[in-house]
Amino acid sequence: MKTIKLLLLLTILSSFSFPSKEVKLEYTFTTGDQYVWTLVTNQTMQQNFLGNEQVIESSVIGSLLLKVQSLTSTGARIEATYIELAMTMKLPAGMQAITIDSKGDQAKTENKVMKSIMNKPFTILLSKQGIIEDVEGIDNLWSGLSELGIDEQQQKTLKQQFEQNFGKNSIKSLFEMAFTSYPDKKVTVGTPWKNTTGVGLNFPLQTENIWLVTSVVKEMANLTADGSVKTPDKEQIINLPNNLKAKMDLEGTQKINSVVHVKTGWPSEVKISSDLNGNMNLLAGGMIPADMQVPMKIVSQSLYSFVKK
View 1 (tube, rainbow, N blue to C red):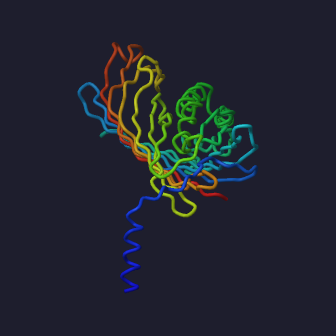
View 2 (view 1 turned 180 degrees about the horizontal axis):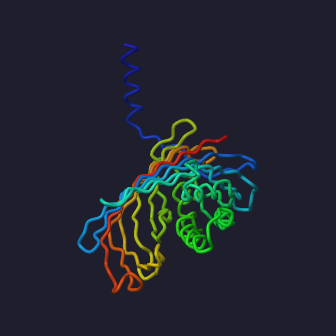
View 3 (view 1 turned 90 degrees about the vertical axis):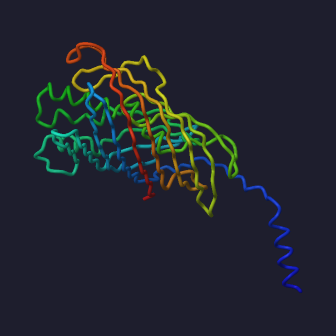
């Protein structure tokens, strides 16, 4: 009889919905704290160039050391330093694959150039809500080009490529993707909030995310975000390699799954997948006799992990 009464009581209690515990998600900083940020990105780009389908597969594997330099009124100044970085690009049929590795054979110029940006610190200003307020000292990344024994023209070309792939806007977008932007109020499981970020590519894209806390287990919170990606300014002219210029018109979707520490706000793991479609409009000039529309599709997956030292 007692067992029956207990089961009945549990059944009645389970029929009620109890509100989820509120949590205040924000980054906390302690001067001197260090984190190793490891990133792995795989991307497939399909282009239709003059009626020919071209597929370019690329991957990036790297690590950065992040160190809290000092506190600010809104968050902290964080010193960021590349520890290692490797890129592989598989080009269309008939073209040789490209591999560049900061730890690779230093007899190869491309590896030596990649190594030259290692251990060259720059600074990120990160707010408690996860907003990248500024990026400082990014030019330091390519400050060692003159020491590589290459001529001035090569240095100029490399600097242009660095500014495109590791410039302020690209680095800002990369950090925006990895660091969740939190609301300024407490949330419960299922409470949505929105934020807008870049996409981490070397041309302008903007993502509007709708975030949710899906669960809180002990000291960790699981978050998801569904994002809508678009080109914010379709008339903006961007510079491409070989002195080419273009305008972009892309849109698509992005999905983020993030595991974060409730007490500190710092992520443990962030998984991002995106699917973009549209056109790259090459502008007349140089190798391009007339404006040319290049349909393209970009599919990418990224995994970021953070480990406190």
